[in-house]
Image (cartoon, rainbow over all chains, first blue to last red; front, side, top):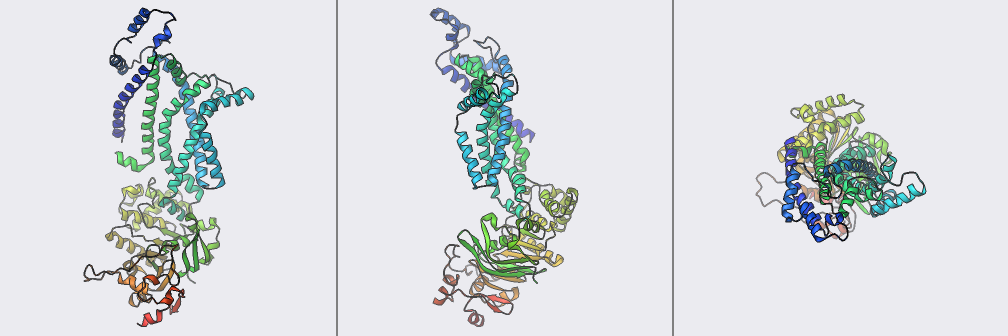
Amino acid sequence: MISYFARRLLLLIPVFLGLSVVIFMIIHLVPGDPIDHILQIGSSPERKAALMAKYGFDQPLLVQYGIWLGKLVQGDLGDAIILKQPVSTLIAQNLPYSLALGSAALVFSTVIGVTIGALAAMAKDSFFDRALMGIILAGSTVPSFWLGLMMILIFAVELGWFPVSGAKNWQAMVLPVLTIGLGGIALVARVTRVAMLDAARQDFVLMLHAKGVSRREIYLRHILRHAMLPVVTLLGLKIGWILGGAVTIEFVFARPGLGSLLITSLNQRDYPVVQGCLLMLGIAVMLGTLLADIVQAAMDPRIRDRVS
Amino acid sequence: MALLTLDTIAVTIGQAEPLDRLSLDIDRGEILGIVGESGSGKSMTALAIMGLLPLIGGKVSAGAIRFDGVELTKLPEADYRRLRGKRMALITQNPMTSLDPIRTVGAQIDQVGTLHMGMRAEAARERSIEIMEQLRIPDAATVHGQYPHQLSGGMKQRIVIAMALMGEPDLIVADEPTTALDVTIQAQIIQILVDLVRQRGLALILITHDMGVVAQACDKVAVLYAGRLAEFAAVGEIFASPRHPYTRALIGCIAKEGQASGSLVGIPGTIPGVFAYPSGCRYHPRCALAVPACAVNVPPEQRLGAARVACDWVTEVAHG
């Protein structure tokens, strides 16, 4: 089984290369360049050309990509043009904030989402089920940046329970976690509910009833275990998604983090930083998926036997 | 008094009535066969006895089910649950799907022991392996730790049987226990069940559509058609002198040795769906002996000794 996952890890290399091409091309094809942010209004075209040559932007795109990739495989993400620091340093400074926010939001939305989904599945078609799923659907349609602003307005400005912005203490994390987590809850709850209802229709569940196991135990011990398989897949995707999904939320709450760094750098067309941040998010998605597969294999003996 | 009595029960699921005024009884040490085509109400009978109809949105809407003196249709669910898996056990049709694919088969047998028999995990494991060995599962201790997909169909059905035996039940309801298995395995599994009844004196309800299985195993037989009893008699009587035209047709469906292929006769037509039951005798559209009155009158069950037959022509048929 270990060899299977080693193989899976190797297969990520071409995915990684493809990802690097897409990231590089997208940001370079967007109009504007970092030099415009360095130059002062009224600078001469000669000065611009000199700076373009200094950073290698006068080279063909393919050559620029080759140079970037060459450094990349040696672990060098390059230096920020505007921020004038190594990209790896910038990421190292910001990543812990994003990881803390992302993992807190992931745990929060998983625990609450699975609980709600399980309760709804157990009370299928009841008023409780419909009400819960209705609220969840309504909640999931609210854009998170707007939700974030409303949270700030109510809980920070009006009630003053939590700080408006920043990342100084744990209280500052409550509102952003709630904002990101609420969207996640909707998704996790719905996947859990459907997966449980699906599992509940299987023959072995009838058998559990026939063995005299209580309904509560059947749902919470046996069916829930089956329902966790698709939920794990979803969570694997969401590991990357939450890091990336936090982009706008970090901005709204003025928190440091990968998202804030990405947006600032995007505005300034700071190519190396944007590329580095996007690459991080891409790697998070790839590893998240792989991690989900490993967890699934641990949970399901059929998968375990198939891969070994 | 019989161990289990079904007293003119009816089953409803929403608007449908898949079982109508069915009466049966079975005692310890007996094997009762319930036969009929798909849709005849056989599985409904199993679910009704086990009290599992609510799972499919159904209920026993009339009549009574008495199990060892207890009226089951009025039993609170919590008490019913204590009977299920302990005093009455179910063996389902498809062992491929009736075991949880992500738990070891051993854990699934052990569960009955810890749930009903007050066993600790270790004691349950020992007892499970003991029962598995009695069912001639080779290398039982290893199999105990395996998952369903690692076992053959016949082995899985033995696991399901072991699960049923773990609670030391008085009654086992086996709903087509061999339908999903290879023919060679079928006979083995039936033999295991027959031996259990003979050795332990438990009661077995064997639901099947296979008259061959009935002949091999059962003491008495109930023939169901479209949710009603057609005929109920001792197994010798059923094969020697079937009275109901449907029973006769069913027995005519068994291939006999030396019979030319192609000369097998089926019963013309198909069993009606639960919303399309014909008036009068539900078998009349397919019955070779039907007369116009059969489409009007619901034939009452007539007692002939210990047997019961629901056909107005029974006297003529029996003597004809």
